[in-house]
Image (cartoon, rainbow over all chains, first blue to last red; front, side, top):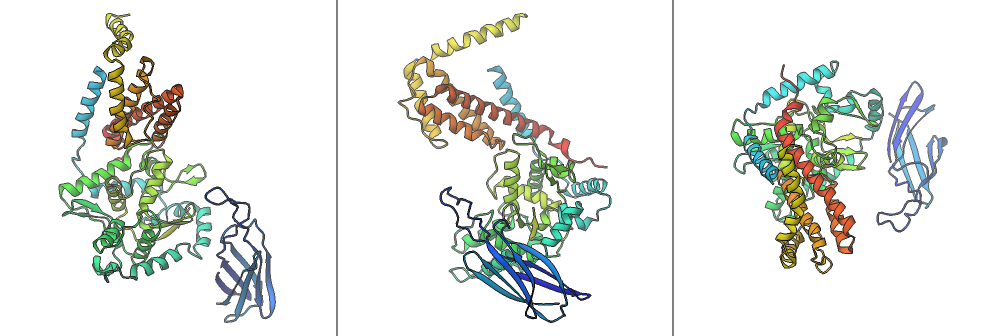
Length: 100
Length: 278
Length: 136
């Protein structure tokens, strides 16, 4: 996960790129045989000051390597954001980013 | 039978007469730039390096968003690791190139007067490998593209400086590349120039055609179509396949001469590779 | 019709008879085997037993020979379409299966494409300058 967070006039703009295959489970592999098992993010959250400022309920319709941009108010320069995703297979990734 | 004889004779005559006569790379570039200045009067010369994203506003907006997290970053990192890793014999890529291989992409391709052929960066990379007992790499993608991407990134901002020395062999190679660029081929009977010269800026189905000027500055390129980084000759093969012309082998004489001509066309423009494109 | 056209017409009509008269079954089978050897390197080998050397098959062998020749010319001049080699392969595959009509039509199309690409090569060599922007 690559994250960029910038604050301007009390509004924090967050942009992120998640590296994730987002396999739907409906696609067959290159040899045309077996189905590639489903592996997709189900939930992505952004927490700031112990408050969830963003929650995305993804699904299999979101494409590979999702790009996200959202904003929230009340953030301050130098503070830390925490971003985390969980997928259907139970894998997770958590990343912290500093607001610039 | 008669017609066959005539045809063969005609071909023989054509082949002997088709030798390059008056190759003048400098005037070629002037002509091309004047041509594009007419097609895109508002476009500054340096902007050509962004290709379609310099002429299509909507596409540019999306591209700039994508460039927040450049898709070729991993390729550069991977390329640096490969470049810095020594060969089994202890030597490294740095020993094969000027300035230890850093910031040299703007001088490629060049005409090697001893070997009497055009040398591209990818060719030089593989020659470095084989000279040091390593297996050559696939020319289109994979490690070759990553190493070339890294080397291109070290040349960021440097002005392309391809030289065509005033000798017959080099001029012949340049002219051969020029002829390839302007020759119609494939079942669709199109030349490189058909899309990238005469129709630059116009639409081809859902895409906008990019001008040939500025093409060579941003390769190797990450293409969304490939979901991967690829060399310029990988794109040549792809373009040829798209007009239903059987692609030539990567780093064949045809493609090397084409790259020579094609890169020379962008002389004086800054390297901004690797780039990201559709 | 003029005298020349008349003669040409007669020549064309007589041509197939002349060809079949020149070659008897042994010669054709030898021609086929030598052509086969040439083709081995380029395409899938054809089971020689299937291509029986009867006068009905002479046309297919000639066609294979002409296609191979046209392919060599086109490759020599660097103007080959991406669609053509698949047709040649199809021709051999169908001939192997004994579907002579389909094989012949595939080979005919391939031969035509090689010839067209040769025309393209000739045109390009003479006229590529037309696409170069004019000097001011």
